[in-house]
Amino acid sequence: MLTGATGEMAVATEETFGPLAPVFRFREEHEAIELANMTEFGLSAYLFSHDIGRVWRVSEALEFGVVAVNTGVFSYEGAPFGGVKQSGIGREGSPHGLDDFMEMKYLCLDGLEGPEPA
Picture 1 (tube, one colour):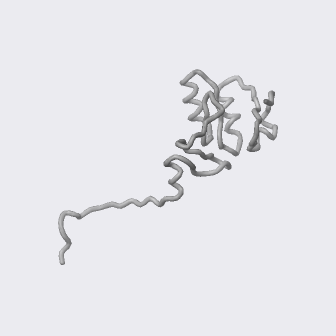
Picture 2: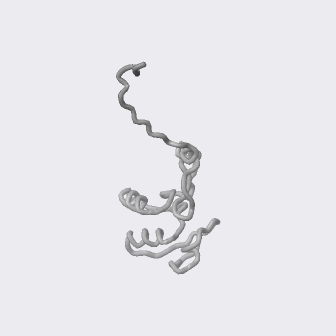
Picture 3: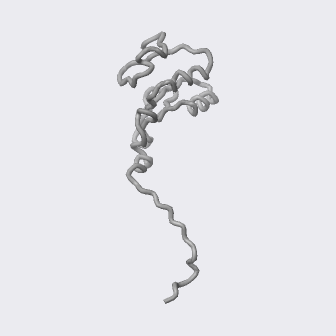
């Protein structure tokens, strides 16, 4: 754990993979959201709260592909996994993971009342 982290530190601007937990100080909820969204990356975020209203508000406002609430373990095969911003686009896993491999077609029909004239 790295306490006293600031927005000027590399840990605030780089996508860190590894056992590192920077701790940023904030006073208001909106400050925490702004600090978190400052990064150009957006793979996953972690939120710890027992206030369900705060959980929904903050989760909706965070610009990340995955938000884990009150846990550090969030993945399983049925959940869509992927990031936003510079952390990628699209999802893998779950039925949503197939979307990138499919072409959607819209078919609009009219005039099907009877057979075509010969």
